[in-house]
Structure formats: structure tokens, C-alpha cells
View: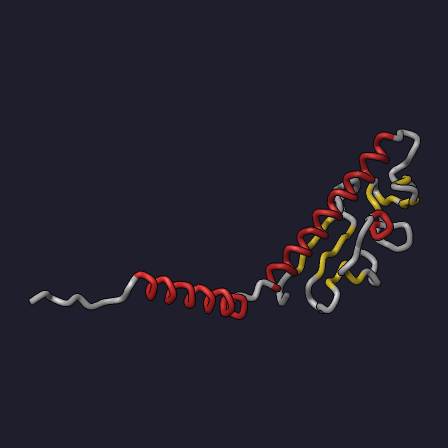
Length: 144
């Protein structure tokens, strides 16, 4: 008498694995909320843009020896007023005017770039208290 083997066939195992994969693909986005990381990345991107803009304006001021550290310097057809060799904080013709794109950020307060829809996620641009020092750029990402 032949001994009968019992167990699952290969097709049954493959179907179970496929069903588990579909369930995992639909359930995973509900458990991993990446919006906080996206907001922090947007803040860090704005901070990098501010650093680059300040450095470019300062380089333009240094390249044009006729300019004083108060400017103004011409960036992409926009006259940017400088303070200690870097774009001033105050609007108009300050750091906000020097940036090409501030979409996604509220820029109504001079020197503060707040993420739209957030009260705490922001990047602040301030003049360095040391004469001629690079501006102070502060990222506040707590509570994003």
C-alpha cells in the first residue's frame, strides 16, 4: 500500500504569497506616514537655498569692487540691497527678492519662511551680529 503524502501544492503556496503581498502593499502606506519627513526635507531645502543665495550675492558684491557692503547688487535683474555684504532681511529687495522660488512657504514676515499650513515649521534668516559674518540661518522643525 502506497503512503499518501499531504501538504500544500506549489500553486497554493504561490497564491498565498501573492495575496500577502497585495495586503502588505495596500496596508503599508497607512502605517508609514512620511509627511513629517517631507516637511523637514522642504525646510532643509529652503535653508540650503538661503545659504546659496546669500553666498552668491556676497560673491557678486566682492567681484564688483565698486560696491560697498551695503550694495545693492543685481541678481537676475532684481536689485538686492545688502547688509554687511549679504542680502538684507527686510523686504522689499532683501533675501526674499533674491530667491527665485518660495512656493510652499509663507513669506509675509521678513526673514521668516514658514511652511504653508504650519505654525511651527520655519526657516529664519537673520544678519550675523559679527560684522561681515555669514547670515544666521535657523531651521525650526519641531512639531512639523
